[in-house]
Image 1 (tube, one colour):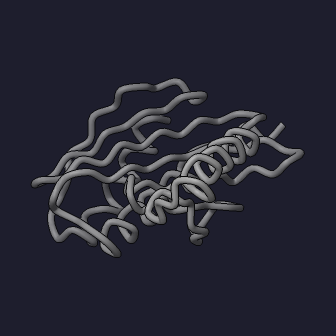
Image 2 (cartoon, rainbow, N blue to C red):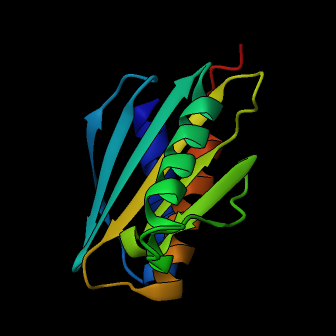
Length: 148
């Protein structure tokens, strides 16, 4: 399963980057799949966790991010912004971290909680978002959920 998730993300990245990337699998457990993709001046970390609590994970992460950086600190780049990711129910982009946080779960049903973090100088701004979005969509397409 980890091979399918990482290969899907790797194949989604190549057309956007214009060159192939390699993948290393750090975690094969469906409850905590971890994959890192590498390319020229690029690193993308993907974590996909199948859980009956996936929506709670998403909600907690985004609420804490918003609470810490929202009203008092005023760091707009750290405030989660809603984005669409195919396969997800809800997703946000945290621009300052170049990270998508998403889930295909709901408050009363499990699913996958996915984070995709882009680092390196190869992609910035909207291109980083497009890359993270494509890789998150590929991850949802390949990851079997814990829907119970």
